[in-house]
Image (cartoon, rainbow, N blue to C red):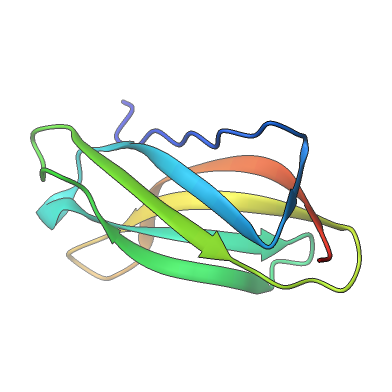
Length: 102
């Protein structure tokens, strides 16, 4: 069952300085996490985002993740909700991206 969608609108396959992220989610209290990680799993950027509506409805969300890298970096953009029961990530969706230094 799909709970979160993730859309990154790129005009080029590589990104410099900041990544614009948008999608839809139907998650508890309309709250989800958006995280940018390098290939080793280190967090480069992270934000808590609030969708326009909470579950069981679909809500829109959007944010910008600023980042800084010193070399071309293969990375992953993830969106997920935290379990209200124990705080573990759930419903994770991810998209590969390439980050470029400024």
